[in-house]
Image 1 (spheres, helix red, strand yellow):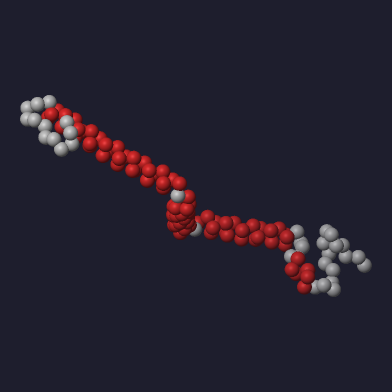
Image 2 (tube, helix red, strand yellow; image 1 turned 60 degrees about the horizontal axis):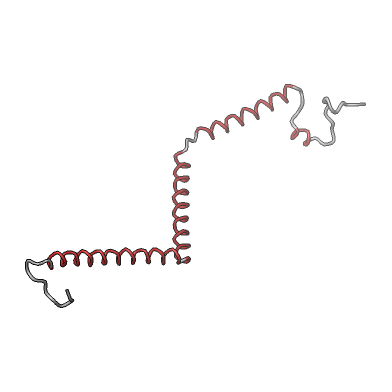
Length: 127
């Protein structure tokens, strides 16, 4: 059967026409698939675009992480920091109390009287 000829009705030409249409449809599908494959390969070889996309992806990830961390910091309970402050004050009071109980003055007081030596375990008064 040639290109311009018409198949005869009721002959084997109807089956050939259906087979030809199927072949044409399959060729079109193959061409589309091949075009998609070529486009995908071209995208993979475009290093500049891939680097830009990767940088955008990393930037978005880091931005999301920083937002999550900031949100977590805002929602974090303040009780532990208060407890640390109270514990620090208690420790300072304990140390000051023990020093006073031992009969020693704090170092800040000793510096106020430089001409006079105080009696202590380390500096006995002679004289």
